[in-house]
Image 1: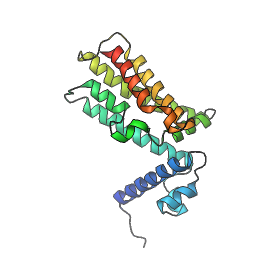
Image 2: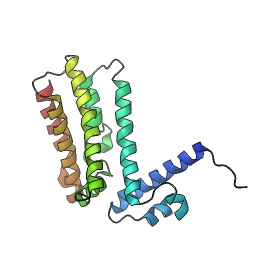
Image 3: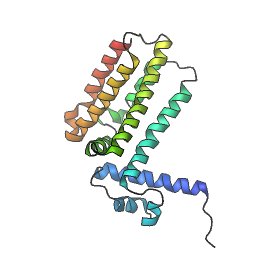
Image 4: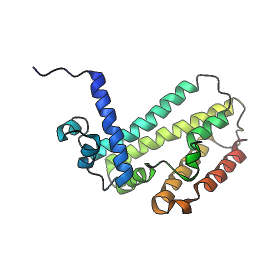
Length: 203
C-alpha cells in the first residue's frame, strides 16, 4: 500500500518548487527557462513537478499570483486597523526601504516584463495580465482612498488615476532594468523624484 502524504507535506513541496522556480527565472529569464531547469533546481522528478504544474506558464503565473494576492489580502486586513501614516504605508508597497534596494529592483521584474511582452498576443496571458493589473490597481487605490478619507491626503486628484501612475512608474523601471546596465537605471534618483511627485499631488 502506498503511504498517504499529508496535505501539509504537499503544500510544502509545492512551495519549495515555487521557490526554486523563482531562482531559475531570475537567472535565465522567462523565455530561456525550461521545466528541466526547475526540476534540477528543486531536486524533483518530472512527475513530481508536473503533479503541480502542467507547463512553464502555469508555474510562472503561480509565482506571480502568490506574491500579489498575498499583498492584497494583507493590505485588506491592515486597513481594518488603526493606521499611523497612510503615506508610509503607500511607500512601503512602492519602494523596498532596505539599503540594498537603493540601486536594485525586484530581481524577478525583468522576467515578469518578458512574460507579458512576449505573450501580448496570447489571449490567456492578456487576460491574466489584466487581472494582475487590476489587483495592483486595487492595492494602491485602496491605500490612497483611505488616506483621503482620513484627511491625510488631499482629494485634488482621482485616487484611481494616481494608482495608475504608480503602476506606470514601477513598470517603467522594470523596463529600464531589463534593457539597461544597473548603473544607468539610476533607480535611487528616479525613485526619489517619483516620491516627490507623489508628495506634490497627495499632500
